Length: 154
Image (cartoon, rainbow, N blue to C red):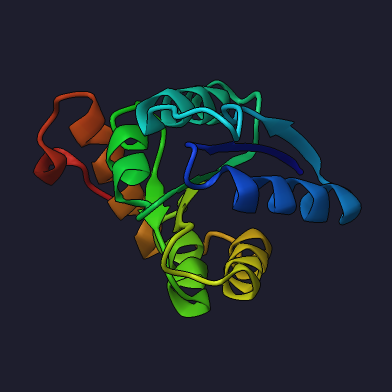
């Protein structure tokens, strides 16, 4: 799988560990971090990862910042991105199965490295269920296009 990973200065160390781990698992990982020794703004990484996913250059994206909140807000501004801020394996799995989340946002400050690894594994292994959930994802796409989601049918 092609995975784009981005982080701000607070998430870069955890992100670099994920890059090594995912590469060792056989994934093709594209890194869009800032330099770990200098501050950088989370919207920059969110934009780069979001664009990679929305354009199809990456199958999925992973973003890390202190809380994960800023990354999630910024990434969700990009058409085609469904970024989920996740803190446990159940939410990670559900974000894929029901919401077809294509970008995972994580808190580098509040979740331990082992838990982050478990969340990433659960998220990468879960598949979108489609069915009734597809209608809901289509409604999200309608909102992105400035359309009324209520007009989207089955």
